[in-house]
Image (cartoon, rainbow, N blue to C red; front, side, top):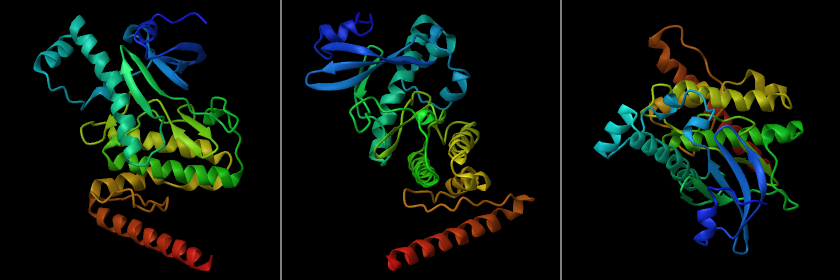
Length: 282
């Protein structure tokens, strides 16, 4: 196929050998399947800010640190240099977040670098070697839905444990291969500690996932994983070892916070006991 303009420099530099086909085009980027030596990978070509349709980007940028004073001032003024710096931060956020999530035990595509607005990373495939489908295109059994949902909640906990919220998690930003869900699309990742919208985005991410999986496993409808995860996060006790119950009790008065956390901890202890009994039984 015709080589996209943004990928041509990568071919000139020997980073990419050939562009095989377009995989998909989304609100923030177009993704191509590319040949890199003897490996088949994907190249995510970010769209220019003026052509991106990603809404409310300012909400996601809040809390992102800019160490260079000149860059910060230029971004604040909205100059050409400032816009270029903003774009670089937007793209680098995805690369940095991919590495952090992988280290935290979250399944994401392995990145190989971002070159001039083109991110090279692993192509996630199904068991026949074709590009893995998005979650939105997959039909699940009830048991599969419950298993995948539990895995996604574990990923949300692991992401938040390293201080990051996906920010746009949905059935369209999750791929499914033979091992289960793989999270993609991370340039809008949110700093949980520095963004005033962090809780809102965390709850939205979790609710999106729960709502989708509940069409296959209706029992998920009554769960409240988002509120439970955020409550534990606020105590400073959230970690990749956290066991969730999906239960949460709203506080009628501020003074009841301790009682709510006690109920969550009690439910978690019950779940741990149940898992231990199951293990011993096996």
